[in-house]
Image (cartoon, rainbow, N blue to C red; front, side, top):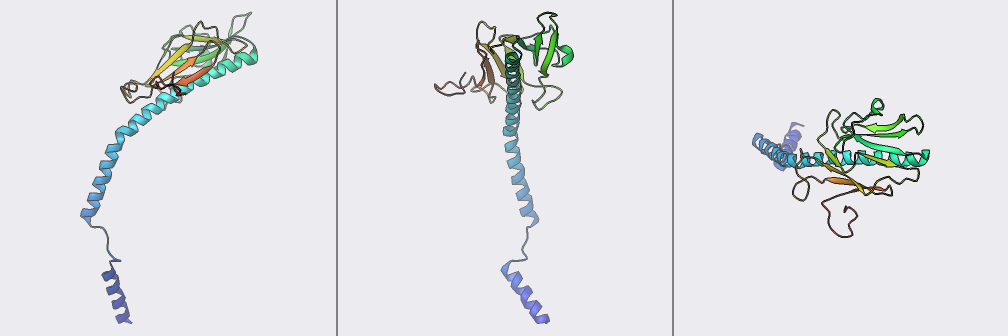
Length: 206
């Protein structure tokens, strides 16, 4: 019986079944893994900054869509405002409108009492991956956009909201950030577009 076990053990050693990793091989493997992770960190950081930029732009886009839908539903003028105040109900009557306001509020004004009713609002940091602050900047041609009961605006020309992320770098093609614009037409239609796209026929073009 012992002879059988000895023969089986000898065959296992001969076939390499008991072979494992040496300490040197393990260290080399870990070094390669660490190198690959270090190479991927900058690209992942750029990805996160771009994701924050897009989230902020989509946040404003959703607000504009809400304002237009509410105007049609209520058959009353509804305002979408950019403000430096927090986008909460308590600030519905804010006068701190700003073309670089990072927060937005959708509100409707009573035609008789002139009091404002809060519909929806968001702080700039919401949805950007940072609850307390945001690295994304907004620059708009208009601090407020009013939609009427037909879904059109009172604008004299197309309004543009431009979103950048200086912490992530310059906008493409000079830098890694895929900066975005929201264009709001006089007719009330809003769309996201990429100012870096110049090809004719590309639907991302501004």
